[in-house]
Image (cartoon, rainbow, N blue to C red; front, side, top):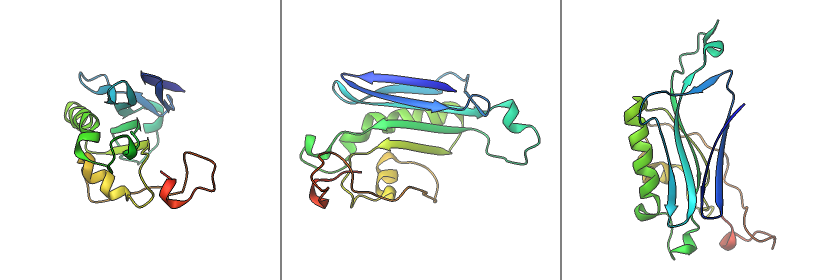
Amino acid sequence: WGRLQTTCGRDRVALLYNTSKWRTSSLGGSWKAGCMISEGRPFIAQAFDRGDSAREGSSDAVGGVVVIAAHFPHPSSFGKRLSDDLVLPLRLAIQAVMEASATRKVVLIADTNEFTGTSSNLIKMCLVLPGNTTRSSSLEQTCCFDNGFPTQDTHD
């Protein structure tokens, strides 16, 4: 297994990947890391290529993919919901990595800290991710205080 990691302030994001199936792209500009807000909320955007052992005997044509690991700010940090200014550093990094790696396949793995009413499609649109298909996990009432997780106090 391989691990990529970045830290902003006291927040840390790690991206784990199977090195027998994936390798980080060697193309210049194929990874970016940064902070979504000053001194916090880190992200990594990394282009991956299929590893040789994953290709052997496979008819799978997945090719390369950009994987993002991110810890979004809480909307209450700014008194608003997901917006362009909250995601701009991440959006620019994703676009740069997609351009450098010449891939439009993207996987987002994130603690979005969004209210449960915020759809995955809205997050995709705010990040200007390509494609017509969005696959996501179900939205769950999680974070941040163990108070029964009422809808108005929960983020996913």
